[in-house]
Image (cartoon, rainbow, N blue to C red; front, side):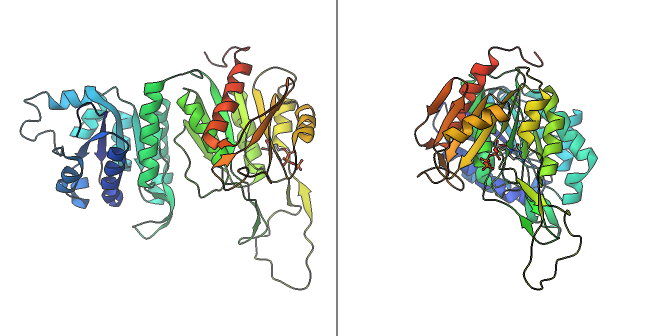
Length: 411
Ligand code: CTP
């Protein structure tokens, strides 16, 4: 390990996903970090310290009572020198201990002894994950600044299917890297600002197996959430169903339908500084709602659809001409979008429309790049093809400029 590499403490608690923490360690090292692994007693039932030692090139901390742990200043130096504490997998138990300040082993004591930012990658049985005790503990930690890499959905080792599987090692290493960089770079131009961002598609169920959806991946909204977090904002992300992993944000609300997104956004928009509607919200939903029984096929079929409520337009109405919250919408067209986007700006009473032509090369769904025109009352600004992260940066620059005219909702 080269001297001067930033150090990340990697806590591993006792879950079946513990073996994946080895890959997290390796990926963190590939991103230029030194890694100090800390294994809880139960983690060692799943994976041996030797594996981490071989990968990280450092002795693994397994107990606060190991010889040397208290006689020298190593553990104090670790608490002071870590740039981040990453816990993957984070079990319900370690989350509970962190939230309640219980320090009965090295990892939980280290958490209390350090000022380094915390990233948790929870993994547990679905029912445990959904338990209010676990969710309350997580909410307390998030309120104190912890970042969460949400568990994924799928088959769990316990035989259940649902949310609870440890996020991918890449996703965890990326989130850790962003966390360290956000603290380091700290442009913090959005500190104290609360930003609500929607992302992904909505699904309008026809029956228990079929739905009307669209090709939005959520990547643009996730890039916006990432960048807003990096700039120090408190970010509430409302995400429709997408297989793309969600970024670590202050609050994550998952929704399925346009109606659910409407309810979540209208409730969350009351005390935010800006709302960015990057979600591809369905414009139509089955008129009679979802059939509770599977629709059997017969001859030709006619589907009666009705319009969904336009969330962005309702946000425009709700602010009654006030400058807050700043409202940003997207307009996706198959053809040059600027004219229609300018009309939408007025119709929906929003501050900025990010217009893109889905047919342009390097723009639209399922690609990492985008090519947009920023349409506002002050005119159209076409941007070149850029990564979605750079587009997010350009949009947030404009949001910052709009916000600079008004005080923070909560200083
Ligand atoms: N939007 C919304 N609620 C809806 C539909 C869309 O808030 N029910 C938001 C989207 O998140 C996006 C913007 O409105 O920010 C898109 O506006 P929309 O009028 O739906 O435009 P397009 O879908 O681009 O185009 P079209 O007018 O052809 O439907």
